[in-house]
Image (cartoon, rainbow, N blue to C red; front, side, top):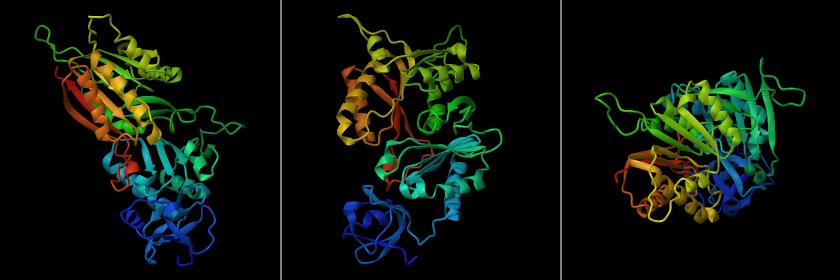
Length: 423
């Protein structure tokens, strides 16, 4: 390992790396001790020649080095198998009953630039760094040894690949019996039935969002569903009737179908994607919940605005016992945060007007650039403007298959709350 090219850091730049953050930017590098090919393994030392770790080098990226280990390790198939098995053990500990989950979450599992999602017996790989891309064969071999999957697919359609000098890469990395591509290399049937908390979700692993669906809400789907029963209105000494639920940005119906199963009287799901609504409709039928659900292809902002529009001196009539707001990220960079906050406030203003007294608002933000305190301020500002007093009854984070490493702030992005309307 001493023969590896060495990246020397400038004075004062080593502390973050010693603390566990894996990214070394080009502005933090003092010099290289030898020419380095992009994607090559290098060792990292501080300006006093003290060893800090090894990682992949890429001069094309602002992140010049992605540290893999604080130790002198050989990066080969055995390395990937050991590291992936360690990541899998974390999931088996915290999600022991899950059959679909994120196996590797890049920096969270000390494999910067690599994501692996498990959808039942099919794996989907996303690679966003050059060093990982050059070792794709070793990664696939390690995954085959660990999981014996029916297939391993690649979804390399992220914009972040271009920052590493990589083009898009999609296709079949491995296919077993019963999962063969056609002559063009495409999957003839890219749909997989994914089990989340006992519900089935038809998932398109080729054309769906991310690697097919959002696995980071798996625990929250179940947690939010407890509020679907509605206010405890008793009739003739019998049980309470279920609640009216609005699921905004519903995608495949994750929150909506869990709410329907948990006792909601009716769930109305909104999404601007016709394909997503069609899939959610099929998912409702597949789970025997179709009679409880309705669906609408619509811009959620427009729908909320239209359903809270009233004439002067009129008031909006609250309709819902539970409203779920789970929008896609409104911001991809810090420059767009102000616009994003205006968008978040708008949907919260409208949603609060539609909630019955005692009703629950479950709301989420998946942008790393909007921190928890800022997101909470937006919600409370909307509550103030609508003259509502809220009681916080739950706080949410990403599911444990998306681990958070506090010394790597980028690993934490999803935050959420549940609030009851006090008045």
